Image (cartoon, rainbow, N blue to C red; front, side, top):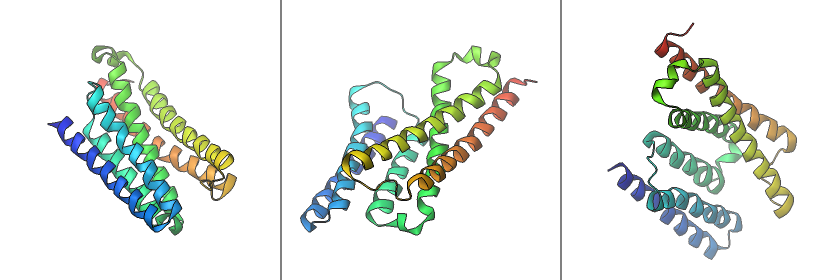
Length: 191
């Protein structure tokens, strides 16, 4: 049931972005159709994983992924919410938290359930925070690369924008890393 719902959600998002791509292409709005074109690929990633792998998906993370795509691609870039000033920082805060949740899910999949009681809650904290911050850094590398090689303006404020984004990513990841480590400490009654 979960895979079927995610399949429908992935198809719906991909079709929505394909429609927007066609619509804005016919209107000659280059920026909007390019964002929508990128959105098609973002929708196809989970669709491909659903169709061609047997990965068990974490429903809250997948729903957050699509909500984040909608907020960044459609609301942020196409409808212009990024011009509000705080929208980009807000989304980086959310993406830091979302990546931290992905880090928790990876930790749980990569460690044996019985071994978790022997793993320090500090390691959980560092892994979740590092995973989140690393994701933010990779995104900023992507933005820098697109600006350099394709003359885009993803880093609107240059170094200042990059640092604010990284601080927001870190803050979102830090909050979830603290919660994850406290929960780990309480679950296994560590000192």
